[in-house]
Length: 156
Ligand SMILES: [Zn+2]
Ligand SMILES: [Zn+2]
Image (cartoon, rainbow, N blue to C red; front, side):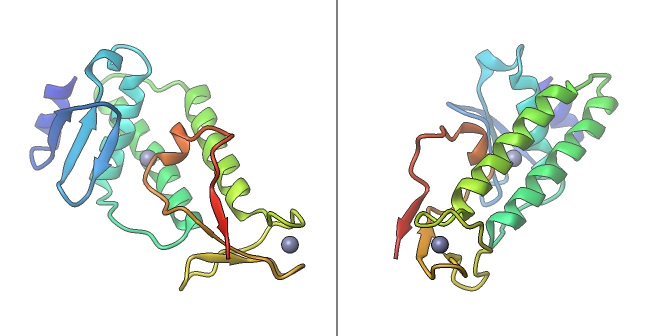
């Protein structure tokens, strides 16, 4: 499968590593070889989706979420080209985990109100109680791995 993808995307380097990721700076997709036969196939197609779409930077969490959705759409097309099918349930689970992640980051730690991110500072400010907090920098596919217990914000 790596060989087939490399044929379609000759400009991208595929390199084995500890987790699935797309590095725009290095033009490199990292994959976990031992997971390729299981759900890792889907993750690999998803990362290739980011690569094909040329995803490189985003300023807000919402923008990142849109890119994750787009990468899954691309992954579906790519799967069809390769004669594979990505389980719709798997995609929905991933999208749900991104949405949960966004919800946790954007909920006010003081009063729970859901707030929009400031797109110039990337901080959040609650319009209800005026608490301000900053979130850890978002990364592609981070949501997929993030555990619910992980702290996502620092109060300002
Ligand atoms: Zn609040
Ligand atoms: Zn992704």
